[in-house]
Length: 286
Image 1 (tube, one colour):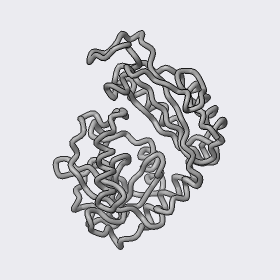
Image 2: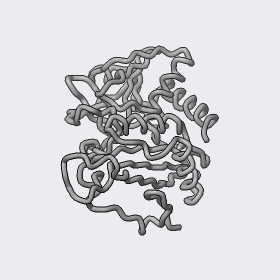
Image 3: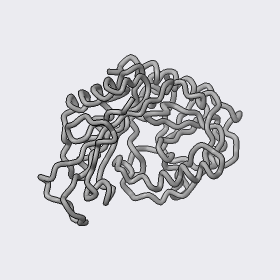
C-alpha cells in the first residue's frame, strides 16, 4: 500500500510530496517536530504533544499553523488512510520557503511548511527489549544550549546513535560538566532504593511528554522522585536505570559504559512504571 502523507493542506501519495530546496527546514534546520505514538489506532498523550509543539514554535517566534483540534483531525485522517494500528505519526513545521537562502528570518507572512507522515510498527508496546533491557555508553554533550526546544537539529543525536551502534550497544547518554543530561532521543533516569532520580527541567534537556506522565504516575504510586543531575558513576552504582520516550515508553537500562546496573537485568520498578504508563495512556488515548 502506498503511504499517504500530509503536506501543506493536502493528503498525497508519499512519492508526490515535494518541498522547495529553499525551505528553511532543509537549509537551516529551522523547524520543530513532534512524534505521537499510536496504539490500537488511537493517539497517545496527544494533548501533551500539542502543548509542547506550541511552546517550541513560540520559542522560535513561529506561529502555530493549526489549532489543537485541527492537528488532531489531521492525525486521525492519516492514521485512518494508512490503516495504522500501532506506530507513530511524525509532524514537522518549518519556517517555510522565502524563495532564496538567507540567514535572516523571512517575512512573517511567509507560510510555514507543514509535513506529517505515519510509520507503522505492529506490536509497538510489546518491544522485546523491555524484557532484556538496553545498554548505553556515555559521550560528551556538545549540542546547542536550547535542547528544550524540539527542533529538527538532530545531527549530533544521530551521531550518538551511530557511536552506540559502533560500540555494539543500544544508545548513548550525553554527559555535560560531569553529569548526564539525557539520551539521544529520550530522557534518562536512575533508581536508588525507592527513589527515582532524573535531571530537572531546564534549557539543558527536552521537556519530555512521556517524562511528565511517568513522574506523575510514580508519585501517585508512592515512589519518591528527586529531580537533579546524576553522574555516570551514580548510574553504574544504581539499583536500576531506565529511559522514557514517546515510542519506547519506559525502557530499562541494564548496562552503562560496560558496567552492569543492579543485577544486570531489568528491575521491578522500571517494569512496573512501564506497566502503569501503558495502562493509563491507553485509557486516555483518543
